[in-house]
Image (tube, rainbow, N blue to C red; front, top):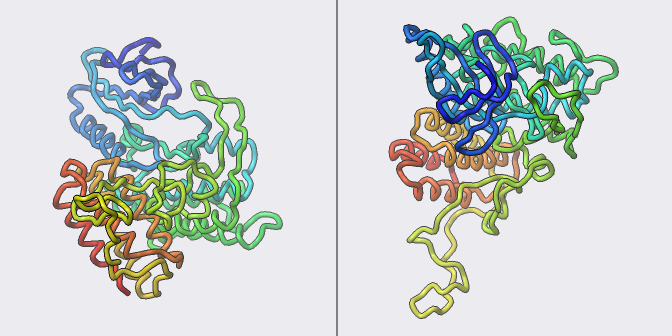
Length: 436
């Protein structure tokens, strides 16, 4: 393959970035949408039906992972290769920055930097596991640091080529990912992936994190914590230790990569899957993803909530021309829902359980094609934010927020949420005791 080659008449290859076994990664230009992309190419024999099916399924699974800390997959296809063989390819977003492996060659990151990176990585890993798959090859070289935060690599085509990732995503596969994560966490904190104690005059916070790394590397896979548990712990730690974004200049950019500044915390809170975002981090670190309207005053800044169209049965706001004569109408009677308050312990427990299952149901729906990726990402973001706030004991208008979620689901078209999936999500919302 040479620079200038046009793949399927659309993607013009510019230069090769890396070679990973039988896969080649190229910087390319999408001439239809006029944007830079990365293209992964794998030569496959026409007779290799099992491998071709595995590559296609892996690309679909990667495309379903709509998460800010996972590289975005745009396209997949097969083209004519040399000798009549097939050339499977996946098109993903182009990243500028450096890998965590490259970053670690320059020395240990600071505590804030290390926690921010690992919190985002844990968030991404929790999303992978929630979709019923595993990574199988988690290591610092698969963790890419960009100006927008961490991006997890190694899924899609390159992931399908590893024996571990090709296996069933059972408990042992998830435990293997957690083991690998524990090594990364320990290396970021101490420089030693097998460290069992903090180095130097480390404080209690670092000692707790090293202890977490030890638990992730437990000999008995059943004793290793789930990725979502790790993500919650690191998000809480990041909130306590991080008040401003860390900006570090990477070394000379690798061939084909832009020399971007890396914010250690990046978008750790954005789109936090299953409760990883913290409102304090969102308010201080993130670039707003959407305009938050005045009706969302209890939502943290920087969170993109699903836009809600006006519903035919909704009462007009005070002072609007709500009757045929154009005269202001009186506000409708308030619903019998609680205002902004800290939910009771019992309400928190039930709500967190229902929202966590709803968050997983959204991921599964995206993977199954029953929930549109864009709408699902926005809905998941609002569910995760509410879950975080309730679990953290923050005052929220639980009834109003649940009603927003219910309305968002009800007002969406069938191509955005299938009727069956919408009914299941609504049923989970009904479990939330909004009048407790």
